[in-house]
Image (cartoon, rainbow, N blue to C red; front, top):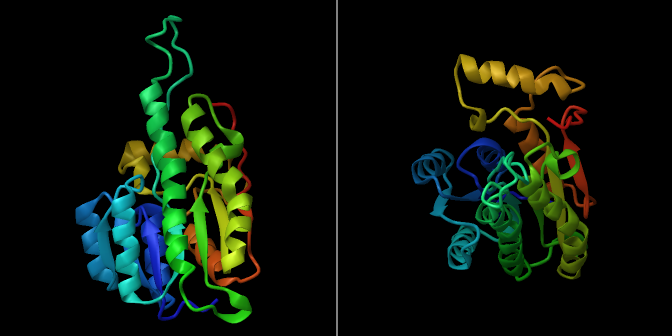
Length: 258
C-alpha cells in the first residue's frame, strides 16, 4: 500500500517508539497527526515534520475523534499506529498479607483502560474514518498497527496489570482484523522487547540499568532502537499481505521471572 499523500495517526507519538514512527511515516510521504498528552514535545515534533499535534487521552472518545478529523484534513486517512501506553509494577499481594497492601485495583484499572481499552477506542474510531475512503488495489483502504509487549507472553513479577493489558491487545488482533476485513482494513500487532527509549532515563545510573536489562537478549547484544520498531510498523502498513499477526521484535529475548 502506497502511503504517499495519505494521512496517518500515531498515538503516543511525541516520544520514543511513537516519535520514531512519526518521523519514518513522514519520510515515506505521509502527513502525520500526533496524538499525545505531552503538549510541548508533540507540538515541537509536529512543527519539525510538518505534521499536526492534537492533545489526546486515548480513552477520551471526543479527543480521539478530534485527532481523526484533523487527519482527514491532511489527506485520506490510511493508517493508525497505536503506541500510547503506560506501565505499572506491583505484586498481586503485599508482604504483610493485608487487604490494604494487595495490588491497587485503581492502578490495575488505569493500565487496562489506557493500554487495552484506549487502543481499541482508537481502532474503532480511526477505522470508521478509514472505511469511508476510496479503495485502492485489492479493495484495500488502510492498515492499523498496535503495540503489545514481550510482557504479553513473558510477564515478570509485578507485571500483572501490564501483561494483562498487552495480552489483551494480542488477543484482539485476529478478531478485529477479521471484523475490519469487510472494508479492506488490515490490522497487525508488534510485541516489542527491551527498546532503548526515554522511559529508562539518562545518565550513568540509567546506562547501568540498561546493561542489566539486556542480559536476556540473545543477539544483538544491546537493547532495541526505536527506529527498528518504526521500520517494522511501516512495513506492516505498506505490505498488503500482512494481516492478523502479532510479531515479536526482541532480539530473541525471553524474559525471566525477575
